[in-house]
Amino acid sequence: MPKTYEKTLRSISSSLSKNEDFDSKTQAGEFINEHLEKIIEKVCEKVVASLDAKMDARFEKFNQNISIITANLGSVEKIVHRNEDDLRFLRSTIDHMERKNSLRINGLPENGRRNPLEMTIRFIRETLKVKCDPVDISDVFRIEKPYHKTGARTTLVKFVTTLKRTEVYLAKKMLKNSGIRSFQRAI
Image (cartoon, rainbow, N blue to C red; front, top):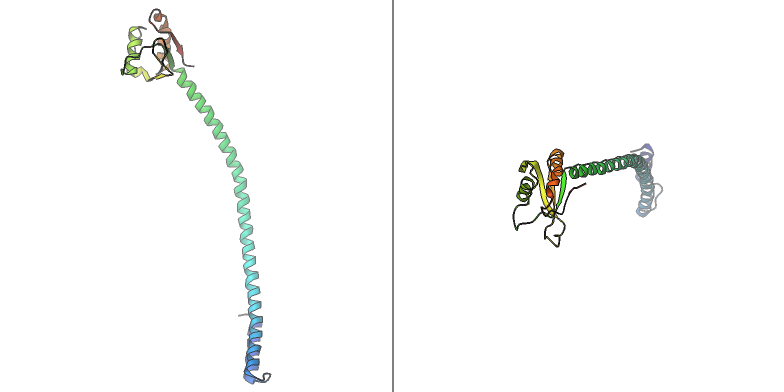
């Protein structure tokens, strides 16, 4: 307890013990209450001032941290935008590479529920006279609506290598009188 409060309490105690200045117990109680209120008020002022100083320091640190985070956020946003640009470029490159290994065949007949891979391999082997195995093709699927005259949809064939796709594409001269409407690169 600070010395000023101790001094005030001693003064109150001595006044009470001497019983000098008081006519009644009520006056003594009022005197004590008055002095205690002053002491409590001073203590509260000091506590509030101390808490204010601590809170000000914490808010200042908090504001500094917010400033740092805000500055870093700008850097992170730039990095994210660069990564998004890189991702778009990579997707575009991958799409191009996938199309580079693909051929579109229009008019390849559909025979019910037959596997399109088997139909495509048979077409490449028998009609185009090119050696082709299932390991040469990564995917085959039908796209678009069926062509109204033949009822056949466009077949998209993705080859494992560009070399095999080129070999099959160059054999398109064998398509005369085969019923296949067109045969083109999927670029």
